[in-house]
Image (cartoon, rainbow, N blue to C red; front, side, top):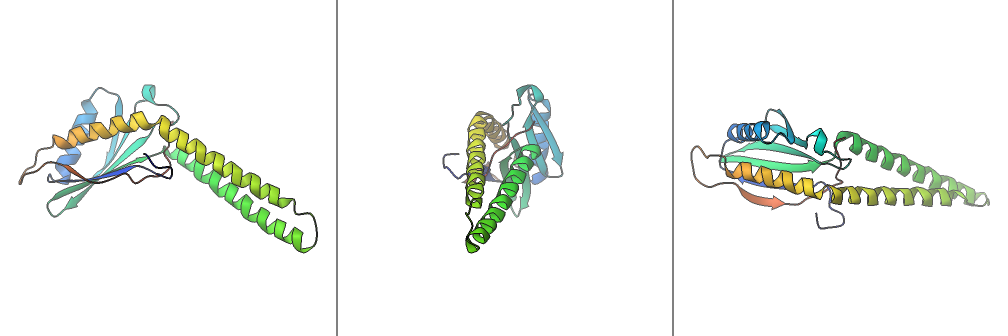
Length: 186
C-alpha cells in the first residue's frame, strides 16, 4: 500500500498442504477465534470481514481463494471493498465519465457553429469530481490500513500452522502487493 496508484492489495502464497486442509484450518480458526471476524465460504473461496461492532465505513473485506497445485496449494488473498461501496464508486465514475464524453462532444459542436463553448466547463467539473472521488478512495484505503494489516497477519499465522500431510515446507510468500481501490463493509 505504498504507491499512489495501488489498487486492491493482493498477496499470493504457495503452500505444501492440500486446499481442503487449508480451507478447514481457516474455517476452524476464524469460526472460533475472538468473535471479531466473520468468515463466509463457498468451496475453496473464503471471505473475511470484521464484525459489526468493529466495522467502519472503509473497513475492508479479505477474499481468499485456495487453488490446487501439483504439489500443494496456492493461496490468493485480495482485499476488496464492500460491494455497496464498490458499486457506488463504479457508478460514480461511469456517470461522470459519461458526462465528460457528452460535454466534450457538445463543446465541440458549439465551437463548430461559432457559439461560446461553455460545455468545456461541464467537462472540467466532471473530471475534477472524478479526481475528488479518487482522493476519497485513497483516503479510505489509508483509514482501512490497520484492519487490512490485522487480517493479513492473522491469515499468515493460520497458514504457518497448517500441517503438511505429505512433504515438507511451510507457506512462503511468492508475490505481494498488487492494488486497487479499497472499500468497506457497511
